[in-house]
Structure formats: structure tokens, C-alpha cells
Amino acid sequence: MMKHIVLILLAGLFSVNGIAQPSRVFDVNFNNCDDIDNIDGKLGVIAGNPQCECGADGMAFRFDGVTDSIGYDDNIERILNQDFALSFYFFLDNTTNTTDQVDLISFTDSECVRDSSLTVRFVPQTSSILAEISINGAFIFTLRGVIPPGQCWNYVVINKSDDKLELYINNQLIDENEEFDRNFRFKPGGVLSLGGSPCINSFSTRFAGLMDEVRLYDRVLLENEVISENFNPDRIITEDQTIFIGESLDIVTGNSCSSSFSWNPLTALDDPSSKFPTVSPVETTTYNYIVNFGTCASTDSVRVSVVDPNVSSCDQLFVPNAFTPNDDNRNDEFGISNDFIIDDLISFQVFSKWGEKLFETSSIDEKWDGTFQGEPLNPGSFLYRIVYTCSGEEFSASGNFVLIN
Image (cartoon, rainbow, N blue to C red; front, side):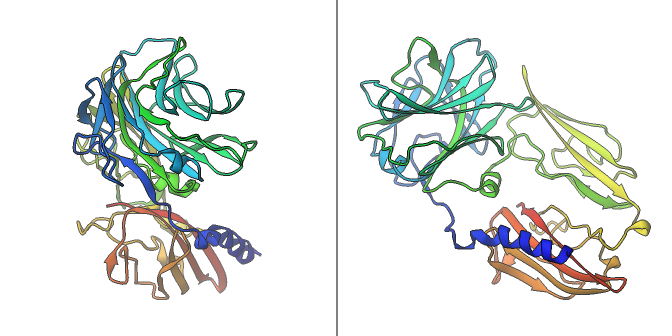
């Protein structure tokens, strides 16, 4: 019975095999301290004087909340009038003190009529994101979601398909609207504005803070794609994991612009001054990671469970949820941690998130090195399936894991 359930689950996971990988059709990352769209090389129209600073990945632009904004008007509606995903990162200025809605990103015409417009705002009173699409000023489709505490950089993804809108905040699906009008079309002549719409009104204000990695994709992002596209600034990338007594675990964190951070507890942690420490606990321990930005602090944690291999049962197959094939001789291969419980390995397979088989072996000693046809693969999410026998009975295990550079 268990084998049949696993196969059904895998069939669901691999049903995306026929879906093409999403392409970025608009990509502004500010890494060269300019406002260029890296897809077609077009520059935006800058108002004010946004400053270039450290960002979620590479560099970002800081908007002053008064005059700064960037506008793109090169037929953006051609992208918005299909299924699309909009994603971006923002870091609200620590000195922001307003009850007005903060304008993050918008698409509207110069006449500022609420007709075929898109707005994404931050609402200070509720610490939430409010996304709206307006049709003829009368029909407004909304998405709302509270930003979880403990993060300074926030990652927002908005999906629009023919009949649904979705809002992700920091990898979590927060809200969806299944009443969207599939016949809706954005009118030409609109401007995609970052940091402040030209249509600021009496209840909204311009954005003061950092914005980075503004992207539009040619279709909606699936949940695993939302996660794999995230740079995880100031977050722990290593997920909760199980190790055996006497083993160590390398903790991997995302990019950070702060040099002020701390770990606790310091138990069995090799270097408290490192953002990538190695831990060797002798009992189950939760490690907390705090990154300080003055009045803003980002917090995250990872739980490391410690088990005795002498009491492992046949259905407890331990597989890491991340590995780093960067040739540093640490966590360079992906394989089975407690292979000693296996009598016979029938198959160990690795698949892409699209269901393409990348690796297969029946050798208990062979692990995956993160390559396909001799070429190293890019970071992202992958799937595994393992079939084995233990104590004369057949078992199956499946799940997902992350490849990290």
C-alpha cells in the first residue's frame, strides 16, 4: 500500500514535465548600478536620484520616498496581457513613519484614471502587502497578505493567470483570488513605475527604502519555482535536518548586507563569527540566526535533530535536503545518509522539477555530484525517489532537495 501511495505522489510531482521553464521577459537587478532592463537593454526613466547600495543579491537602488522613482513604458502591457508573474524584493527604510499606503510598484496611465491599472502597496497599519488590479475603475480585484515578522528584506511574487490571482510573500502563498476576469486587458500607454507611481494620491506615498531584482516572467510561477528563484537574503537556506551522533552539518545562509549578526546557542558551533558555520551537536538543537540592521533585525532558525544510528528502523531513510557541489570537499555529493539499513538498493533516482531523470544508480556506494551529461547544473530544487529492501521487505522514499553553489 505504501508503494502505491508514493507512486501516486510522484505522479503528481512529475505532472509538470510538459510545462516549459518560465522565461524572464523583464529583469532589472541594479547590479551595475543602472536601471537597465537586462532582457531588451532598455533604460528606464529616472526621477530624483536613487542611490546604489548593497541589495538582496548584488546591488539595489535606494529610493528616498520623496522624488525618487523609475518608469518603464516600452509596451509593458504586452507582458501583462498574458499569464505572468511579477517578483521583487523590498527593504522598507527604518525611518519610515507614515500611516499612508506606500507605493511599491504600479502600472497605470499618465491620466491617473483607475482604468486597467495594477498597484502593489505596503500598508503600514497592518504591515501587509495590498495588490490591486482595477478594471474600468469599478471592478477591483485585490490580494492582501500580512508580512511575517522577523525579516528585513521581503520577497513578493504576484501570479496572474486567466482566472486566478495569487500572492506569495517570502515563499508562502498568502492569498488568492479565483474570480479574476479572464477577458481583462491592460490598455496601452501605461508606465511600470518602481518606487512611486505618477498617480500618488491623498492616501498613498512614495517608497523609502531599497528595492531589488524586479522581474516579470512569461507565465505564473509554481510554488517550487517561487522558492527556487528566491535568493533568501539574511535567511538560513539549510532546512531542518537529521544527523547521526558524531556527524556534523554545514549551515548555509543567503546573501547579507550586514556585518552585524549572531548565533545562539553556541553549543557545538565551530565559528560564531561565520555566516556559514559547521555544527556538531550531540543532542537535538535549534540554532537561531540574527542579522542586525540598526532598528531592523532579521531572525531565522534551523533545527538539527540528532539520532542514534543503532536504533534506526527500516522506514527511516535519511536523505539531506540540500548539498553544495562546489568542490570544497564538504557536502559535495547527494546521497543516502544511513545506507547501512539497506540490504539491497533497487534504485536511487534524481529528477529535475520538470520530471526529467538526471541520475540513476543501484549501487549503494554511488552518489549524485550535481551534474547532468557531464555539465554542472544551476542551483535549484530537485526531486529524488529511492526504492530499497530492508529486513526482507521493500520500501520507497521520495522528496525534494536543493542544490546550492
